[in-house]
Amino acid sequence: MKRILVTGAAGQLGSELVPALRGRYGNENVVAAWRSSPLTGEVADTGPATQVDVTEPGSVDRAIRDYGIDSLYHLGSLLSVAAEANRSLSHLVNINGLLNVLEAASGAGLERVVIPSSIAAFGLDTPHDNTPNETLQRPTSLYGIAKVFGELMGNYFFERTGLDVRGVRLPGVVSWKVEPGGGTTDYAVDAFYGAIREGRYTCYLRPGTYLPMMYVPDAIKALIEIAEADIANLKRHADYNVNSMSFEPEELAAAIRRRVPGFAMDYDIDPLRQYIADSWPNSLDDTVARQEWGWRPDYGLADMVDDMYENLSRKLAQ
Ligand code: AKB
Image (cartoon, rainbow, N blue to C red):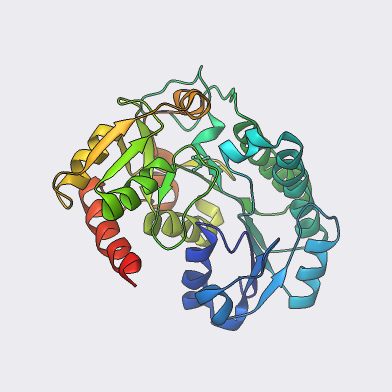
């Protein structure tokens, strides 16, 4: 991996993955790709950036050719709620876009492609506690259906074309640099903004809604470690469970209260987001990732809350 293209570089994950990759591979060697609005801030200032529209066949090929790319992280996607709000755009981006990326990568003979999957790849029929890596997957959200498509296409391209496609099933990601948008798990980030700005937050998920969650440094670590893992140790391709913590809204509120005494969480349930959350696991069994490539998260709930609180307070005070 010497010249890396990252799609979705402006997003919640991309804005943290690009600087981490630039730190490892050199600023000039990590190309940040944006789709609709040019990048700003750290990602724009520290290295090359280009427009790539994954829904347009040829756009990814051009970027690969122009920048001499040998590896690619494909992060550009519409998250669960955004996908339900616009089914045809979600199909274009999450299904056609993914296929365009794989075809371009395979056609150009790239060394490696990393495509994150998600807890959304599971469904109501999946065992919800300690969900195994290998289990029944019958997602009911469009986003989840696209994630299963991505996992299966990763296997297909590996077997049929030799393209080395890798990926992890990420939990909901908690981060402070860029606000997430269009996801079901976003409440866990929004709650910090509410706590710091107003000392209160109205949650759109019911108390008791457990979901697997991960602090962003662990998500970035998982994406880099799976990309760099020795292929001789990998028995799977694009579908490794990675777990770090699970909580429900009341537990998050209690943990935030340690830093914001008096923080109040009340509830106004959004039926769509509750329906999606109810179909996702409570926690993941990530034994396979631990055994095959040494996965181990660094953050639990208390450490995550402390770090989020410090960083977000500093950012909002500027
Ligand atoms: C979402 O909520 O849609 C995402 C995810 C769990 O993949 N954060």
